[in-house]
Amino acid sequence: MSDAAKNSGAASPTIGVFDSGFGGLTVLRALMAQMPRARYAFIGDTARLPYGSKSRRTIARYAVQCAQFLVSEQGAEFLVIACNTASALALDAIQDAVQVPVLGVIEPGAEAARAASVTSDVLVIATDATVQSHAYAAACRARGLRALEKACPLLVPLVEEGWTELLVNAGNLTEAYAAQAASAPPQVAVTAEVIRIYLAELTAEAAAQGMKPDTLLLGCTHYPLLRYLLESAVPIGVKIIDSADATAEAAVKLFDQKPVQKRSPNAQFPSAKDQVQVRCFATDSVEKFERLGSRFLGRPTGKVELVDLGG
Amino acid sequence: MSDAAKNSGAASPTIGVFDSGFGGLTVLRALMAQMPRARYAFIGDTARLPYGSKSRRTIARYAVQCAQFLVSEQGAEFLVIACNTASALALDAIQDAVQVPVLGVIEPGAEAARAASVTSDVLVIATDATVQSHAYAAACRARGLRALEKACPLLVPLVEEGWTELLVNAGNLTEAYAAQAASAPPQVAVTAEVIRIYLAELTAEAAAQGMKPDTLLLGCTHYPLLRYLLESAVPIGVKIIDSADATAEAAVKLFDQKPVQKRSPNAQFPSAKDQVQVRCFATDSVEKFERLGSRFLGRPTGKVELVDLGG
Image 1: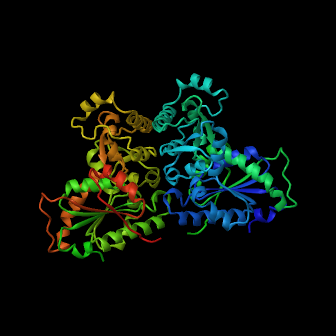
Image 2 (image 1 turned 60 degrees about the vertical axis):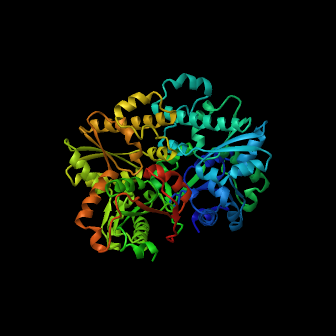
Image 3 (image 1 turned 120 degrees about the horizontal axis):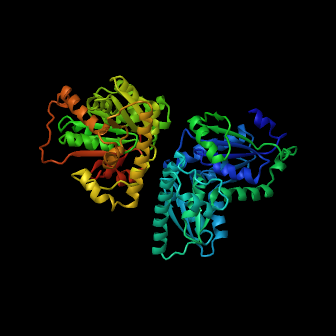
């Protein structure tokens, strides 16, 4: 057992966050904004991504290994599965394998869409693997929503290329966009055009099916980095729901119901002026994680530690 | 042993072609154009892609399994490694593991660039993994060429999205492009703009290093589907060398040196009016392979057979 695990009872509670890659850092970022005084351990299973093309059994095996690492080695008392594929296909297996509360990203995203939608017609954009699982459609249907899903395979590589930097600090979005659109670098203009094409195809398909969507659900952990470009591209009246934010809000509620403090009687949050404590782990490609991760996390990841989880 | 292997001595010789995915079908297409009377067996190790993020040892193990499947199960008497990563990192291991001639894509590509270049300055575009291996730069340097490599991570997903369909049957390229550019669908315009941005960055970097490049080497098996858009985007006087074509030409030469016929004394090519015989195998995602593969192969792949190569 590591020092972190041994000390977890005496320090602030630890929330474990897991993704197949580093996209889930946007979920960690949202969690840190909601619960700045917790400690966090994040693992990206970068050696074995993409999960989307693998069988349910293999995904469950990998996800359980990561979950057990976070609980046993890092002392996590609460797990967030910040990976759409693992949330869709392995949540039950993880819940069976560990003794701490586990939250995925799909149910909170669908729940937030239900709260936001008046027409009960929802658009979902995600990766090809997530769309093929139809996990969001099923979670929406269970809440009385009609969902139309679209795979947008170009958005993840556009984000990973960094062709997204426009306006990340803009306050008044529409005004700032209008002012800066003319001077947007060509890379950002490409991303804006790709988003326009995808959303035009999706809204045309929704209209053809007689839907009146008023909500767009972002079903991929990379998409929060496109939030401003998406805001500028959705039809007027369509609200954007981000699974990362929705999951962080759900985590706070679950946290209140099952306080981590009860599991560690001596635990105390550090004072508000303390830095959020984050340790990041990856199973491969640490350099890429460090290089790109800070953009997803909104702050430096610090040194990413390499771990070997076996086969 | 399969029927194909048992019968290979009595039928036309079989060329085995291997890729981690289905991009290598562009190499198979080039081989079929050069040697229409051979039989072909293609395997895409789609369950375990991408190879680029894995260790050399793991890549070699996977590649050897695929090579042995082609030789032992499909009776291949000659292997083409239509995968840049495996060519860069596993060619020796494959050559050690099988008793038939083996050809990769990198050396033929570099050799064709040497033949084409007058200034001896060459530009290479490829995936991130291939660029990080610097295999093309090394192969060029060994031939007295100076190579500048650039990773273009958006081009593979753009090809896989099919945002490339313009002008595939155009005869006079420049004229046809000028006539049709104004009516290009927005998807193709995005791809053209991405290519323009990448090539502008690459040529600016080359100029900053004092290079006078006259050759652009396509170091990814997906890029032949962008050939026409690339032709329209390169500076005047820059020739495009396609590793797929170069590999097929090298295969013909190697074929002449080590004729497959010698290994199968009774082998006879089918008559010229016979269809080229191709069998395609994949380790996963057969549906995606069938759906996208025909665009790479330039004809239907036929039914793609699923094979399990173990762990």
